[in-house]
Amino acid sequence: MLKTISITQARKKIFKISDDIQKTGSHYALTENGISKVIMMSSDEYDSWTETLEILKDFPNIEKEIKETESDYKSKKYLKYPTLDELLNKEGYVVADSGKVKYEISNKIKTKRKKRV
Image (cartoon, rainbow, N blue to C red; front, side, top):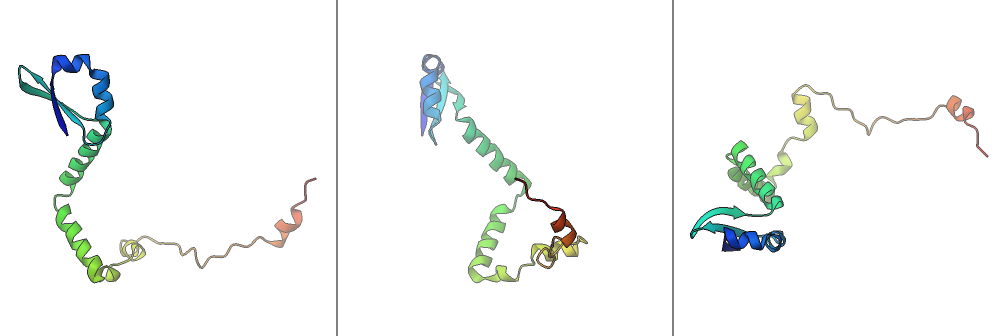
């Protein structure tokens, strides 16, 4: 919700405005001689907007990719996607299979342990 007040009024009510802006979706337009000069929003919301804009800049086709992924999920086509291990192997990385490796404590180590009293 956008609330419009003059900069002079905002100066008098800055603490109230600051508290109000912390509510999600609350914004203030500060005017000078009836002309909007500044829009105020919470820093959390500003950070969120900035991050969204950066993502949209870095991934211009993200909306299309999201729709394709949703479609693949509904049709279960995603089950044919390569796994992370397969992608890493293709790039030449070696992925350790921790499920096959069993670690055991040798008898020597077991016998050296003493109970503390």
